[in-house]
Length: 252
Image (tube, rainbow, N blue to C red; front, side, top):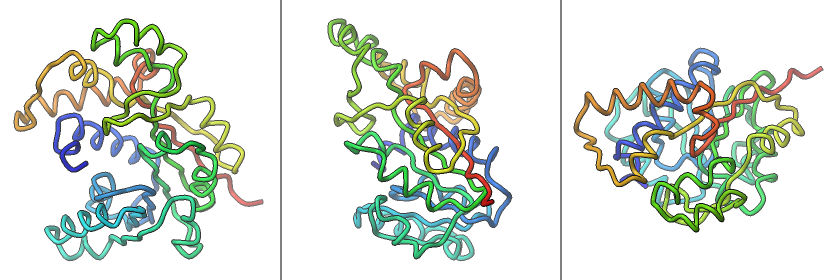
């Protein structure tokens, strides 16, 4: 997992999602919960921006990596980060009923047979007026990877497929924007905006290109292009993943 984030593709994901989040989160020091947040690659930049972040993850190994990374950061930043070992389906209990201005869940839903219990918890943990941020594989773009890898029969079969090889190299389930939008709405969170995640960077990777993560100028240029593509049609529609941001309604 750490290796994936050290790649150009990993940097692009963190960069693009961070910019999306900053468009919807209230100013710091608002509280943010990252469910399935692993080693903190998405939330440490938020802590650096002044947010009070909690990482909830079921993997003790991933949380150990988060602790190791925290030790290298300034004291004031470390004080803004809380680590909790628990699965997302019990997030409300794990955080003791605390509510958050932002609840993130990126790259997790596709590894669950049924996303509903987790989505219910995400929505529960958001405070009134807070956001729920979900990134998951795009079921409308499942044929892209096998086609770019020139696996033509697999690509033909993938147009209506709901599973494929995820970013961790294991089979995962893809979702549609429409399904997840409807699901969060059931729990009082109205879809506010959506974005694409990973487009040209995926095409390069699947086409066999090798990118140098130490080439700062190219990496920054790629990230800027990916961010712009994530906001526009038709690009966001054929991105490998989509990023949905919803806002919880105010209590009546």
